[in-house]
Image 1 (cartoon, rainbow, N blue to C red):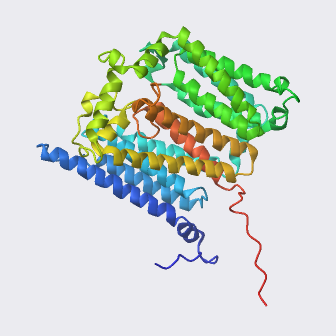
Image 2: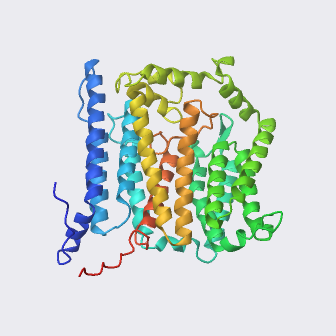
Image 3: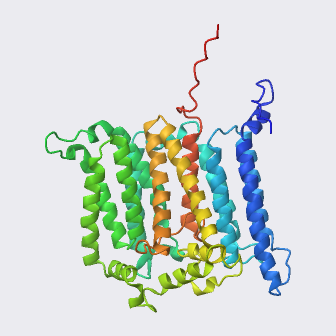
Length: 452
């Protein structure tokens, strides 16, 4: 296979951009093909059981493929230079999630007006708008002037409004229609943290000599904000969000200041806070007991864990076949426990493949953060990637009984409106950081001297 030549600078700009984004085009094509094969397997399994063919059966895959075509052509048209592998990994995960939701009957495929069918296409379009709108360094305007504190105040107000006007369900507080507006905190809080740490990086890194103490004079506004937000979230019973935001904060403080002491201090405070929460919240105590000994209450608090583990065990190495499992026996399979259904029908191999794609996604996010020279952009990309990775770890760990359940969804795969849209916005911000910024990789190398 001949290596692709660099585009001629005299050719049309669209042709140049088209040539440069050929890796993305190949990844998108592979995603469309792979998800299409999955849809074919699922439909074939249904027809084997006597289900009649309907003209609307290919609709989810058609919408997915068409949206990816629009995504690629738009990026080529505007000569977007953001990361291409990240888009390829996102396309596969989003398509896999759509395929899994159709398999579980989350959407009414026979009804073309079902809003659920358009969640993934709408999310991809939203990601595209965010990436283009904030590209070429425009994302830096998010924290200009007083906007930094607008993000902080907006985060606190958002949780307070949900607590005042929301409805309680299964112990937690949700918005109207059981939506979770607080998912937006994954964006608003990280924007504030990245801007604050970037502005005060040198002061925050100035720990005391001898017995090192944190610079409280400059750290107290950040601590006050985090304590107030955590108190509101704990009142809402959203322990998963507290963990996700706390991990992002510690990682951003460490990389923003270079002080390992933040990780040590954060670990100590996390252990103390965890012990305190277990003595106050009975909800956390029940989840910890179900994790330590699920057979103590097999038909109560441990029912979901045991059913998920049973399904994954029955999948074995290769699975029972896509569409041939019994996901109806796993509670909340569409959201919290969708990984158990994947393990049951696609086996250990399919479950590992999905994890590998997630690792590619996180790896590209960290690579973009490492290559970005602008401080705010680097911390923003690092914080968003950390949140996605932490959420994924919490979900997979809870389903496989590696850690206690936290009730968070699997990004881009689980069913959910606000959670899914927020994840797409986060990817859009990461793509915006990757476009138009001077990076180490893009720095031209000096020409080699001619040989004698």
